[in-house]
Image 1: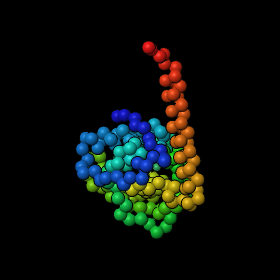
Image 2 (image 1 turned 120 degrees about the vertical axis):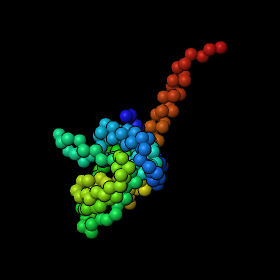
Image 3 (image 1 turned 120 degrees about the horizontal axis):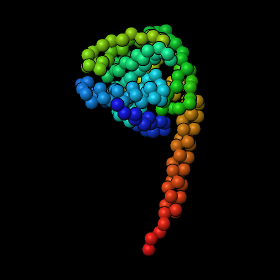
Image 4 (image 1 turned 180 degrees about the vertical axis):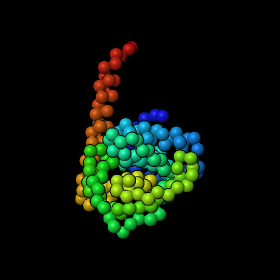
Length: 188
Ligand code: NI
């Protein structure tokens, strides 16, 4: 298993539509394991492959609370086949939008179809946090972020903030590189 860097907005890859997995083989299982390790380390309760820059339709989730035994679930090609008319509101966050939380309304219950770690087709009925997490992660596979479900004003505000932070980071990096070059002894 290996920890992978998580990409954040405004990284354009987060807007990609991920491709279905043809079959769940050892490579896919290795990716699932890397995703779980990365998610637990973050820490988070869900992660989509595109968040570690892999545009494949794979999601991992563990909604177990602190102190409870781990309950990792890996989903390949998850698809919502039914959602309830009744909605629920949950304050969501995202590992690709650090330190930002906002209420999002989604169907309270869903049924999803997916392939498990062994490539077996399964269905899961989810409510509560699992329903929210699964919808949030399946959105990622379609290039959709939770901020797409909030008001445009709020979304533009948070997006701009991250664009600015990314710009500053790039400038700092360039500055550090220039400083390092200047310190190098000149020969000749
Ligand atoms: Ni997310």
